Image 1 (tube, rainbow, N blue to C red):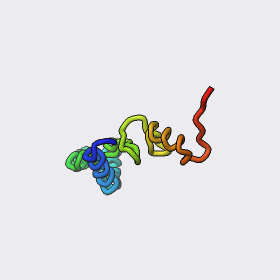
Image 2: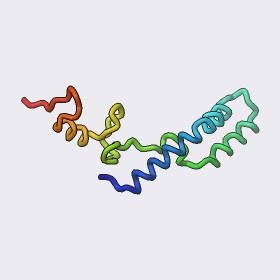
Image 3: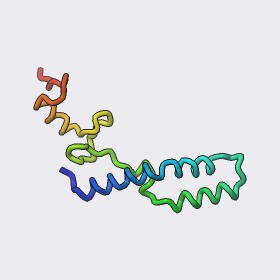
Image 4: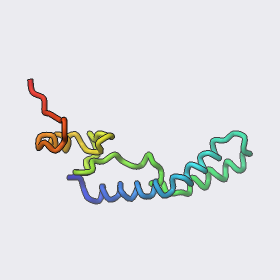
Length: 101
């Protein structure tokens, strides 16, 4: 089990990034548009830099929903490889069979 503080910090980042997503996208669009005058683009860049860093989507960590483990997480299932194996051995994931040869 991962540290609870790390899991909670990641949840906080997720909420913040969802809340400020549209605002960040609008400012990024202005900054990247070469047709807009340089002064307006610079002001948009300053506003973007004033937003909290944790509101960026890249700051969010992929973590296991069960254990909170940060590495070896399957994106589609949102669980780690270890948790997947345990659930598979218990028979809780339909169609998953442990291979042996």
